[in-house]
Length: 325
Image 1 (cartoon, rainbow, N blue to C red):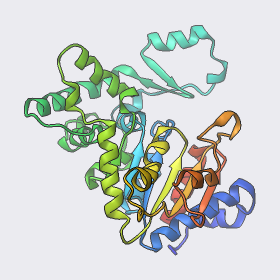
Image 2 (image 1 turned 60 degrees about the vertical axis):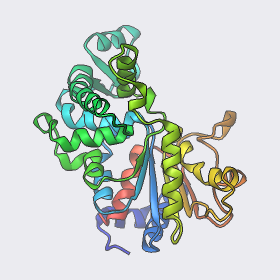
Image 3 (image 1 turned 120 degrees about the horizontal axis):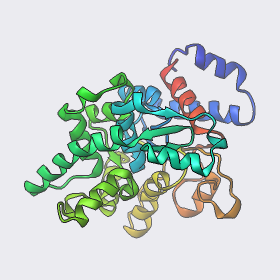
Image 4 (image 1 turned 120 degrees about the vertical axis):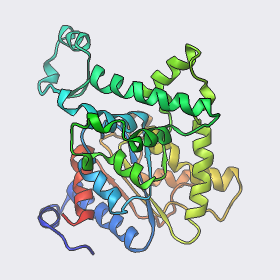
């Protein structure tokens, strides 16, 4: 076990019960997976990039404590937006009290609100747009096709954004991932801002939809990756939030086992979800891990954890524990 610093020691001393205890158990379970030589998939839903998760998650990437990421298109792009436009963000701590008129006023100022934080459209979206369009167009002109995250990696590694950096680049998890060329899937990318922008170019006839690899291609790629990487060691599943970022990759196992009839496909070797969803109203995001046994995703003996709390609080603490902080 990594030597533990003050944050981890505080957790071990005080987090003894309920969700606090689940948090510590999940962190220990994650650490055990890595010590066994298993790989870990981390999923990012919600607005974790705008919550500046990169401050801890980038270190997790640099220290090889995650081997593959599944994230929403929003998290993919919002880390870059924070990287190039952070000083233009506006915090609205009294967001619960805003009237419809005040919300409209924010829109007219080009400020798109995510809970208590407004993303500046001109400095964030448009600053990225002019650079990413060139990369999209250059690929198309060469007859090349890439996944959404691969285009973002090209953008970061080209250096064209460095002139716009407004935070310490070590706090960008996307930059850390690009530098390692970390495996990634981005299901449902089309519903992100950059996905909408790409679609607008397709509608205008300036780009072809086929230049961007699809979600089906992501699933096929993930199937090959899982098969190759689970032959000797297990692969764990650490889910932050709910939604498609988690739903998409976890079903690669039953797809391989049932639809491909590869009955030697191993189940996920660890599962943890941080979520404040409940099982009411058929919420899949709030389903307890045991439900996944019935879908052929988890084994009876798979270590399973659920922390019913705010991921913006819990995830950095678990990452701090893994890093020995």
